[in-house]
Length: 253
Length: 253
View (cartoon, each protein chain N blue to C red):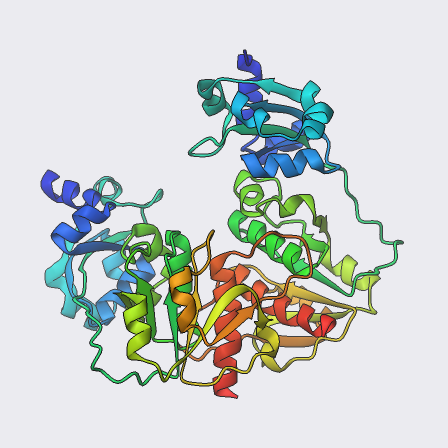
């Protein structure tokens, strides 16, 4: 039996205010929760249908059983933030993650996002970063929240393998003058002929307004995805996918 | 005053069955409907708030006024398929578009989609094609419907500038043996080092299952977006963006 208070708590976590207050967020879905239990992330509680627990390996069941509460389909639906609940809902502690500026920046490539607003875009970008082996993403403080349910869902589990920091971007760039910042702009050099020199940072701007003027001084090279047709713009995640793909391909060649 | 029957008709068009029956679909939003009225697409009716019509140019107003019905905010909300109605809803005739196989294929690059299922992915891919100047997209007959409201919305107007055909893909490939088919697969050559020879066709498979085995004989070259990290997959639209970007860059260089 899941208490009303617990249901209310979990449902409240669709709002950033309550995620901040409780320092908790929700991960849902059969596959993503398995990856969660296998990871180092701190799980507060797991609400699962009996059939889901039966699919767990003996080792994972043993390691996690104290945190798993079996629920009915009806209870799961009451807990779920999805349109269609998917067997299991996990309550997870938001990791305490502050970027330490004294720490050396050892990454050959990182991503910086300026005022990204769409939760799906951020989640997709985290998934892209994870695909291309970009381990660190630096978001401006006013970017959409990583723990927004739509963002978490769109990462398809990559949230567990990628480090996302909310920082003051000018301060961040000032601390790492040795990295070359490539900014995605409307009138730059073609990304398809750019040679990305490591260490570098790919800076992507807001969906509608692009990169804020105060960040321009930190950009070493303006890059563009040339347009041959008539669409007014490319989706921010698509642009990130193209640029990150080319940039990391240069590193691995 | 909008009749109940009209409201019911428009709301029914969220379902493919009724779009097919009436040969109508819906385009919403201030910007996309302006582009619609400027295009050659056949508009049945436009339901708009007075403030939207005031933003139209004199010429566009003159050309379109017989089709525009002014509505109240409440009526617009009743008509809209969006969570938040956006000033104007247009009822549009589905164009009769059958691919004529005797027609020469003059395109240097086209896209083929095998069993794509996510409406947002299809819409985003149409927008990508429009950005890169790829005018023709060939969908397998079982792809998600182009006129699905989520697809239309995700095209951001590119639906008006791109020709999407539903075809039997094997028949399509057999009729155009001169075009080189590049298939997006898990174990192909890196797309970042591929030289795309025109005329060519980029084939993208289903989100979960990839390209169906019966299409493999038509693929001249297997291409892959190399993975350096741990994500299990890339979103189909992201993969299309990367491949289409590199393929069309080769053509324009």
